[in-house]
Amino acid sequence: MVWSYLLANLALAALAAAQYYEGYEGDEPMLRGQRPRTNPSAMLRFGCSQVVIERLDPLVDPGMAPSSHMHQVVGGDAFAASMPATDISKLGSCTTCHFKEDISNYWTANLYFRARNGSYKRVPQIANQFNDGDNAGITIYYTSPGPNLTTAFKPGFRMLTGDSTQRQSDNFGKKMQQCYRCFTAENWGGSMYSPCMDPQFDTDYFPKQPCVGGIRSNIIFPLCWDGKNLDTPNHKDHVAHPVGGPTSFAVVSGECPSSHPVKIPQVMLEVMWDTRGFNDPEDWPEDGSQPFYLSNGDHTGFGQHGDYVFGWEGASLQRAMDSACYLWNCSLLSPMPPKVKNLCQVPVTVKEELDAWLDELPGGGKGV
Ligand SMILES: *[C@@H]1O[C@H](CO)[C@@H](O)[C@H](O)[C@H]1NC(C)=O
Ligand SMILES: *[C@@H]1O[C@H](CO)[C@@H](O)[C@H](O)[C@H]1NC(C)=O
Ligand SMILES: *[C@@H]1O[C@H](CO)[C@@H](O)[C@H](O)[C@H]1NC(C)=O
Image (cartoon, rainbow, N blue to C red; front, top):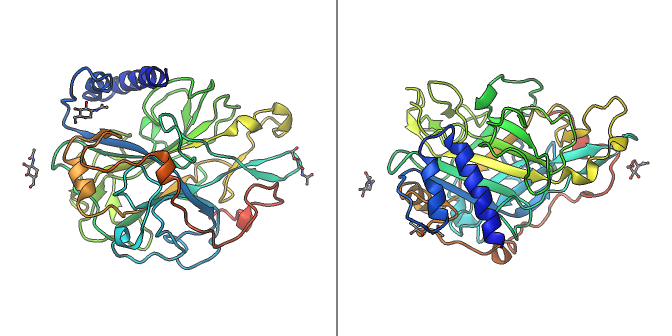
């Protein structure tokens, strides 16, 4: 029952994706077990449960506890206010990610609802589609066009995408690097285009209307690397978009610029915000405008950003990218059931009210 539901939806997703990306349409029969997948491209898609929610940011505010704004964090238990630029997979002992080999950390800002009286409440997260049993968290994607065509990240690598101070559109259209999908029915109902590609329900700003099935965030990282620096002061300059500009999710072609000649796997984060408890128009601002804020104080949504600290064990990610691994199906990696990965936790060091009504955003929501 559950499987037929999942497969029906995956079929739809594959069909929608195929409208844009030749190659992925061949995947769906494999999921039905009809024939092995022949496409050599790799696309891992797997859930990482929440490992902690707290005001720490080892990339932007290293050593600061609390950092400027709240984050929801997934991945390995080496996450801390400061993380050395060493092999994180050796510092952590467990992970909330589906594959045991992935001790990386991924984090994003949190979402808050602002009531008419000015009080804020954190919007809960739920397990994403196909990730039953996950404790909320983030769904992670890694894509590569084929064997030996991307170079996996090196130990100590980290990067940031998006800009927490941004308040207007980049005008990337269907090549948006961050977006919100407004689900028009329960259970991820609505269009099934690839992330950030839906002309109607994907926007780079917060949806202006209530979303019956919740709001999904997608955050896409660049796919070219300078081949030298594991990090740079703004955590961005060592990576770049291909020469043709920003690329949509699952566009795995694209030539890298000579300044950043090394093609890396494309990383994408996906987060499900359960806004269903905040859809009553009576609770929305009287002028009908939308009521959500990112934890950095952004009321537009343009300031959505994502952080990544690489921490895969040894060459495990490279092997998966070179072996056409697809979704959560990768015989080279060690999957864990949700009840096992959900046990991994990072103790909260910055103690704060998480789920009460708050007079202001944690840290004041100063826009950074
Ligand atoms: C996983 O992929 C392998 C080939 O890589 C295939 O033989 C197998 O049927 C797939 N399993 C599922 C559940 O899709
Ligand atoms: C503000 O409004 C919310 C939602 O109606 C309510 O739950 C909360 O108690 C109110 N806060 C204050 C300080 O009145
Ligand atoms: C990819 O590289 C590995 C290791 O160098 C090699 O064994 C393999 O044959 C290569 N695969 C392809 C398709 O080129």
